[in-house]
Length: 332
Ligand code: 5GP
Ligand code: MN
Ligand code: MN
Image 1 (cartoon, protein in one colour):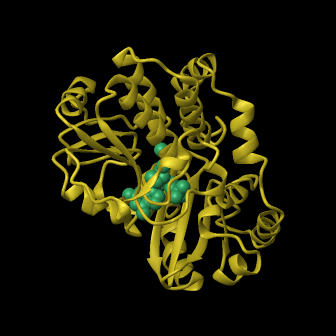
Image 2 (image 1 turned 135 degrees about the vertical axis):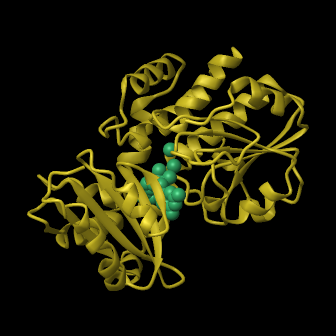
């Protein structure tokens, strides 16, 4: 709940000639949509600023997000050689998910943040961090309104994508009244829900659907059906020619299990590591487990990365998930 307010952010922006805007590594729809909208907002209010939209690592923009207005101008952090006056983080507040962009932050003149992840320490010069916001995109929209700037159709489209994806199409626990009110304003400003849905949810490649079928076929439950998990190996990804970055939706297949309260999806990623996605359907806080695993996130959506293969990761994480039920099952 740390905030220094929009006016403090504005003062930092006004004092900067060059600004690098960046979201977290393995960017999702909120990261990319919020970042691109924020870049457009800054440029529309302060046309004289040199603003760069950075990608934290050197991956491609995920295929399903390439339709976002402005996606073609995203620059990989390794290809950015300026020392920006201001480094503007959106959809993250801590440097640990910046990957290559961390070096840019370290050589910048100051740090601003718009984020909705819980943070326990203030590492920025000016920021608004509000964990009850459904998406970072809500805060970018709020900042746009605060500046009295125009909400153009392209900004609105980017921000609607941010909201739709971070709320799981307005189905997760974070889909509050504010999320719907902001979404309504975005649609009034020219965003197209059907266009977002078409690109993000109705453009799966057949090979991805085949991989989904494998993942679905492996779903296993325990703790009387309250925990469900599945996984994909590197071999599965290779057999179906699906890039790791396109696997973000697979945890949603696991969470569909009736009666499951915790969904876990594991996938092998390059470098001998396993990436885990955790989701809670009840109000049980799974971010505790993600943090114990060296990751983090929100109470009902969190992630982590561990060394080793799927079996090793399961051996470490499953006991931690079971321990959440050690009190007999109904404790929080
Ligand atoms: P996902 O499972 O979709 O990758 O991440 C779910 C949520 O947990 C996201 O909001 C993300 O910010 C957070 N998260 C995922 N992985 C990590 C991690 O390794 N470290 C931290 N601090 N947060 C993470
Ligand atoms: Mn995100
Ligand atoms: Mn987010």
